[in-house]
Length: 312
Image (tube, rainbow, N blue to C red; front, side, top):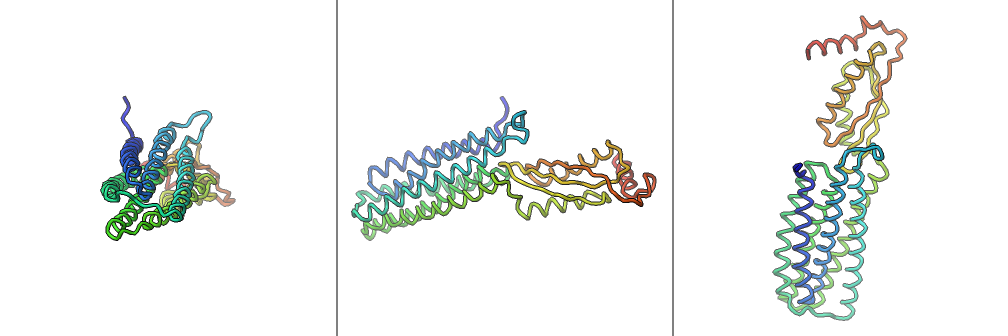
């Protein structure tokens, strides 16, 4: 049996935690009649759906490239991210509707103490899971796990806000606090969902990688190309955890095919070492210098031959 990757293991933990929290909150919310707890239960039910989608997307995204998908399956993660954003936004809209309806009808929470206990447990579990998912997402550069960690981070803030509202309701006996706090949390959920949607759409539309990553790539090229004249047409995009990078590299026109291939392999390896998930393609172009001194005196070729002797 092949070992389970850190991304898949994290996705499994996320699903299991979401199931446990959703069950606990839903039962408590129905028993107490608290919209705050029911709101949190709906959010946890969404966590189950989202974590399940992430689990399937990550497993699919890790499949190697094939004849029908020569660029790999990385965008399954991106699709999962966009799907999550849409569902989260819809859930926030439903909570807003229900909160306004309860404010108008004057609904009263029967047993806020049970909801308080549940929210404390949920707050602690969400905090621990958020840190774990964020750590794995950073290590693997997974957009789906980053989205999942964001969702559970939202749970930390929403659970805290709802807990404060339930405590105030318990101590001050202000029934309108329950739907008001739920309404505020729902607005926050919608805001975060829209931000998540923007992030996913950038990947779908093949927006270039952030300037910090592009600068790192440019620095790596400049450092490792030696005297190989120049590079141009640098293009970058993301497909899930993959970072697709391609550019043109100008080399001495007297290089052999084998020598040029060795240069590109070396440079691709250097970039892949420093940029997680990099898939690099380099197009070789010959220099157009009319006054080229020839193979024996070309400074670029001399340097390359010297490096080859040193490596040997």
